[in-house]
Amino acid sequence: MLDTLHQDHVNISRLLNVLRDNLAAIRSEKPVKFSLLKDALVYLSEVSDTYHHPREDLIYDYYVAYRSHDEEPVTNMLKEQHKEIIASGQQLLELVDMILMDAVIPLDTVAVALEQFIALQQKHLDYEESIIFPLLRKNLTEDDWRHLEHNWEHKIVDDPLFGREVAERYQDLSTQLLSH
Ligand SMILES: [Fe+2]
Ligand SMILES: [Fe+2]
Image (tube, rainbow, N blue to C red; front, top):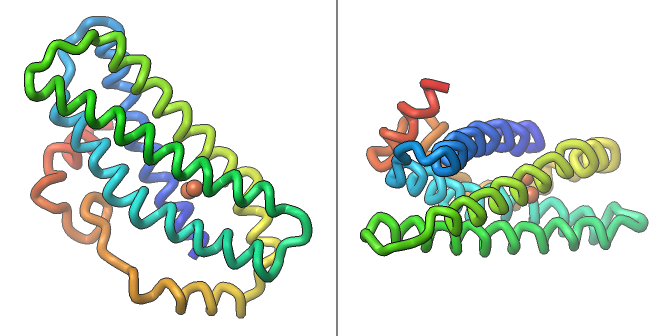
């Protein structure tokens, strides 16, 4: 289960790199493919916010309830960060949608929002990888993981971008990722 979550992190990192390219393009006033930026943001909210984070929340809740000693504030903080990331992504997506509908939005506003979103995601990801996952690896037993897998089973879906088949709506984004 942790391996799957780690692979999600690798995938998210690749998308963050696409976002960074977009940010650099906006900053240097180069042409930006806003539709592609939108695809990346939609993917992050569709898959990571509805699938990756809830899965982590399930583990964190279990950990706090049964296995932790005094790390509660840490895991609560993580859940708060998930909410923050979702809210920040939603705001950014609204801005990008407005641009795609030809509204006049200062590019600087988009750049700032995009930069904050990337920073938030990266900080959270690094924290989980360096602090939280090692903690879980150390303290959760095989039985714990079996139990968690079982609780999650009914929610497993195939990833529309990194899964066996790339969904129609992510074809362009997938091509972009391959060029990285
Ligand atoms: Fe997380
Ligand atoms: Fe994560």
